[in-house]
Length: 113
Image (cartoon, rainbow, N blue to C red; front, side, top):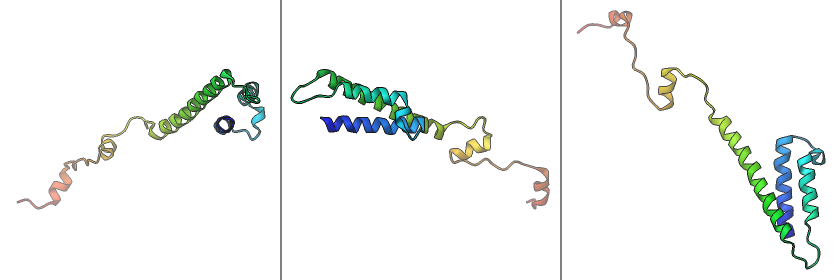
């Protein structure tokens, strides 16, 4: 059970490091709070603590939220619209090509049948 807690805490630290971009995680208030909560709900000896399981569940939920937010931002940045597109670029996106426009110059150069 303790290894699961440490795994969650390490994962939270990794996600928070990606968000705050600081080398020292002790300076991040959220990480300090989470670490303090993990210490408060430690199980000693044979004692089972329901609050610790609730704290682990809350930490796991927060970790899922952070990971999902990061992945959502990455997907949104990848597929973000580029604004108004021309008809030609829109056709190219879906694999179509526009027909060549008629001009009198090209019609005069081609031999008539």
